[in-house]
Image 1 (cartoon, one colour):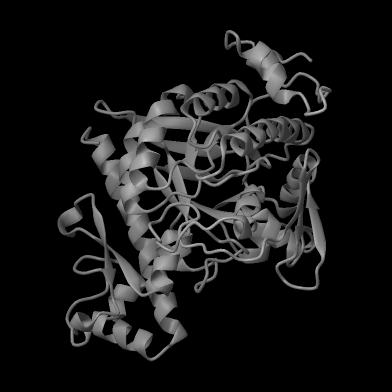
Image 2 (image 1 turned 30 degrees about the vertical axis):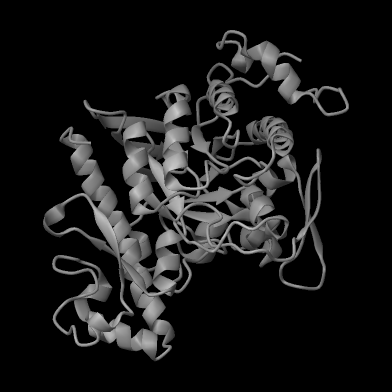
Amino acid sequence: MALRAVAQSPGLVHRSLSILSRPDGGAIGAPPLHTAPGQRRQLHFEVLHQSRVSRARVGRIHLDTGRTIDTPTFVPVATTGAIRGIGMATPAVDQVPLVFCNTLHLMMQPGADTVAAAGGLHSFTGRKNAIITDSGGFQIFSLAAGEMDLGGADNGLKGAGQRKRPSLIHKISEDGVVVRSYLGGGELYHLSPESSVAFQKKLGGDIIVPLDEVVPFNADAHKVHQAFRRSHRWQYRSLREHQSNPQNQAIYGVVHGGTDVALRRWSARYIAALPFDGVAVGGSLGKNRDEMIKMLDAFTPCLGTDRPKHLLGIGDAESIQAALPMGFDSFDSCYPTRLARHGSAVVLAPGGEYSASKVDMQKAVHAENFAESVGGDGCGCTTCATCSRAYLRHLFKAGEHAAGSLLTTHNIFAMAELMKRAAREITNDRL
């Protein structure tokens, strides 16, 4: 099997043959993947400023759909086509250049054909700015949570806070994954590399992601290697399917390898050598933030600098601050919205300083704090324009749904503001 796309990396072609061969010894039989003469990527990544003190950078992604994404950026998660509690077409969400929707959830409800009939996710949700759709691969991990116990501590890392529950995975094979609907009724859905791309074409996001298999940090070596090989074969097939009909959508390849540094480096070089429009880092990177940072630092230099880099499922303030100097441009996470539903605010440091903290708004200390807004002095969100900490605490104690919505609005705004502060730090070569 010829692999023209990876010929630029010495020794990679030979090693890729074993990765891309099926477990039964046969070859996938894919044609060469390459960018044909005259064919360009589906985005242009413009580096506006490269830091002199780290690999951090300020950039702008020009998408073929006509939309742009200023980086660095935080990407809120709108799993079912809405930021939980506040929807999609609201001022807080409008200010962020990219949101993340999930293919598996949307194909179950309302169905990809329904979204396509509406004109795609932008028309369906009223969103004007860019949308990235996940392949559904992460749900292989989250829906299979019955196989493991990741603990209850919510530290912002992928899978944190999940407890054992019945697995909805019916079957995982070379062909793809079969999952049982979480909506009840026992309906089965099949997701293959090709069908995942096809579903994402119907959803009409600006950026799509290939199907992959994610394993937890505590998976044994055999499971990690099995998922690693399969994920790269799936991504190859996804890219081939996408190239047959790009539809102005960009596609990001995903680096895997669990907590094995050698696998991560191999994956980074392999994905960077293929004609993906951007590079994302997925899978479990460790059981805590320190392990994650050490792992990222070990392989991110292999990712190259010519394409935007996205850190999947990691988006708390502390992790972003650690990953930005490694050259990542965007970060998605449901952490800020989940914080809001549990009564905690992302509060930025005063005076424009590039830092943030988590403040529990349900504590008694806020019961009569009528003077201070949720985010403190200087916050420009709509929640802080009208809502004191005392009032917000009252709403939470009263069980009002408005409490979560108000706090979600603030947290999304705060994360967007934090990224603006990060961009200033990078531009001034302080980060």
